[in-house]
Length: 265
Image 1 (spheres, one colour):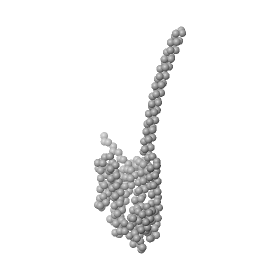
Image 2 (tube, rainbow, N blue to C red):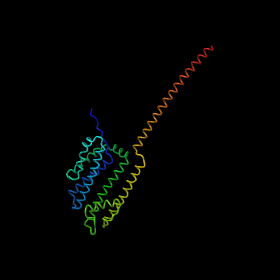
Image 3 (cartoon, rainbow, N blue to C red):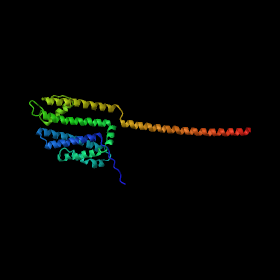
């Protein structure tokens, strides 16, 4: 009889890494075959390198937090190889990472329950994913819009990435700014997105710090229920002893009454 292997549902951050892997594969294909100039291809390459660093951070976090590190390496070795930013050909290995996570998504009900149970990590992973996607997408959009435009000062990949970081964080240094109408519309979208994301992250962090975690509350509730059951059992045992003693006293009283009745007769 063969043992049934249980497929653990992916966490919210695993799903976020899956989406980043898909985006990275698309970026690689666009970099190789897309009709872009040198500055735009340089930006795509830098964005993919940033995604590689995120994927590597997720891999090493999982490695250090895993109990069985050998088993983790045997299962996730392709994640490490596919996340090396210096070797272009290895980056296509992220397709295998996507396929593995998609295979785990066959147990969709279990995945949904897992994500709903860990709603805080799901929300945090979603916000960070949106943040990275907006950063990369806005940098590409602003470079394609502003590069070559008269009076524009966003002409390189570094300019576009720095502009995206400054704009989404609403710092507003003013060293790089759009001069076209389309670029200003992109800036407005990035600003509103950044304000919403950072407000959501701040609220989530505050909620996590001020309220007890769901797992700790559940453990405390189980401990309270167990203690209550033990107290009830103890009280029932004491009542049973008292009932036994009462029965013995009643039996002795009956015997005395019977003896008195016989004595009178």
